[in-house]
Length: 91
Image 1 (cartoon, one colour):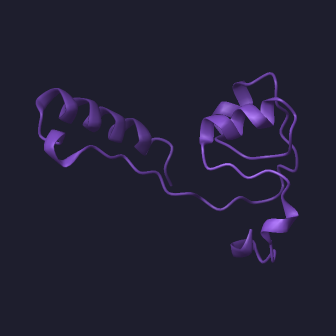
Image 2: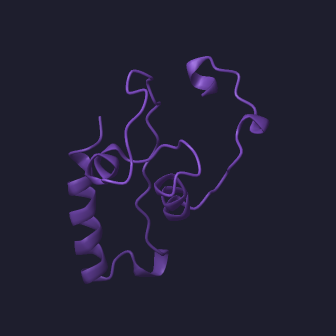
């Protein structure tokens, strides 16, 4: 919000959660207005998009694997497939 010029403070928000799944469940339950992936929200009949005119800054996506597993063939194939799939939604 600060990137958009809105001087947001923690006290403005009644709910804060760092777990994406729990956060989404709170939004579905009507505990607050929140934000999540647009593709998830558009397919979820329990939520309604509000204020679509407000721009939301792009958030980074991290694709990680434990260093010891990165070169394991099956892990590498899945990681490469995910990376290729994510590219369709980036930029």
